[in-house]
Image (spheres, one colour):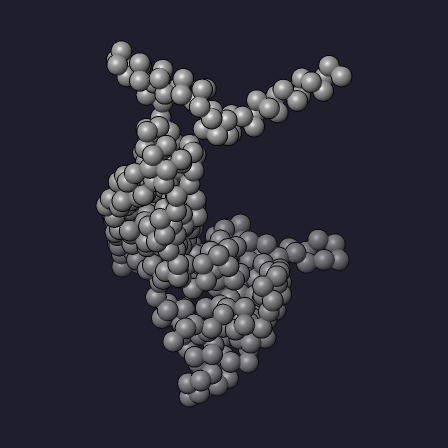
Length: 378
């Protein structure tokens, strides 16, 4: 069963701005929140759809990937259940308001818990790997949740203490004239807690520097500047928050024979002038082996021959490109005396016997040159 369009789920146009997305999410999340629809499975599923659509469309990079590739952009490492895992029975309506308006009014919870940063990995692959698909292993440096304190930053057996300045809120109010301004607590820096006994492994940061090895599935048909998203494989969040995502940026290396343009492949095939004049059959390379190509007589240099279905299959798997072979008539070199004599005879036959018909293109060119100079002398 195909997934419903994210824009349709939120009831917004594709041109919707950030504030429209937040407004639509707030309205729908309030309506279908599990706390207001207890034991209603349909409302729960609807709420999961809304949250999933909001998390994709509110993120500029994820929205761009979705607009370009649809749901296929998130198939690699994507787990649909992750959408609801961040919304348990502890999620109240204050969390919804905080998600939507936290950037306007400030939100202590968002100050204390921050999602990890997204990462980008540049990967170079060959044209063959891009066309056929492959699984690649990559090793990346990253920040991961500390395994000693589990992201709290406090030494094993201890817990962070509530901040006495902000009373655990992470925010303080400062009166300036007629106005009261809310800002991050200077004592705990917005965390809402103070670590008196820092973890000796992460030194109170809750995260440690490490490397990890990941398997990345490269789908057939991928091209330069395409990106693959690996869900939750970015940096770990602070204070045990959700990890960011990892984006694998693809660059397809230049090939020695083929050039790619969208889903078509191009190559140049040299032929001698005898075959160009008389015709014949040659073998041309493809990514799946060799195929025979018939060259008709009187073929001119630069002519394109299309071999259907020998190009690149689109990343959506809907269509297959073609292979276009451009023949180049090659001038012979290192001629011996007999070959030169034969060519002289051939050239003389062109001049003495219907030369205009043998080289119509040359005739048109030089006739045009003659008219040009004749016009100058008038």
